[in-house]
Length: 256
Image 1 (cartoon, rainbow, N blue to C red):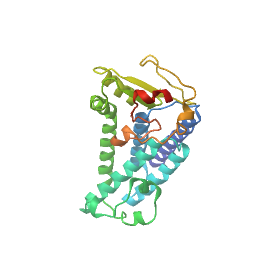
Image 2 (cartoon, one colour):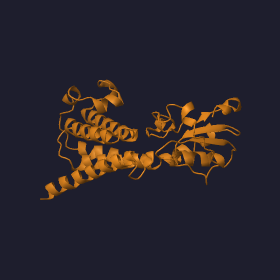
Image 3 (spheres, rainbow, N blue to C red):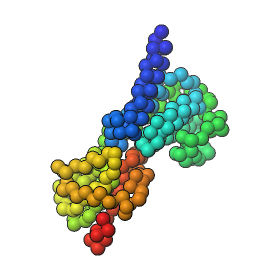
Image 4 (spheres, helix red, strand yellow):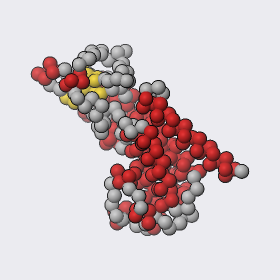
């Protein structure tokens, strides 16, 4: 049956994605950047929206939230996944509010974090059926995917506004977005970059920047695997790699 085949295909895609998340966290699978992970997560949520059985926004939100919990449990350190789940939940709320003729501001306000972790009462207000809701949610998620495709370029274009000549900049780990950001600034500015790295990733990029490795760096930065809000947070994308640069003056560089 076509319907059964679609459900089986969707289940297999979800399980494959969860397996990839687990392997990536253990260091045995491919290490994806935040941008790639955001796109893969959002695309899977798009498939769930298009193929899962649901008749109201409340049904869809419950499905997305349950799958989101499974994804975040598979790899808790990959905060990009949870963030994209919250973004999609927000899209569903907004599209439902648009059909009801009400604005998001007039509804009960809830944080993005609560959208993922809460349940129960929130769905009671999303049970009304709208025939075109599915198409609108799919369109909105596709627009989000388009935005994600251009995130790296959009961030890199702003590099000269944040990086000035002769500065010392520190980043944690390797990120394609950070690399593009720094390369764009390097076209017109000269500056020093310190890359703090930690096991099990150890992905430095000596061909791009002159790299100096301090094996005792963790003693000065006990939270070297810290949560990573940072520059990408401004654009709605979170990853384990911190991309916020820190300006370190010359008189404190000895501490490294």
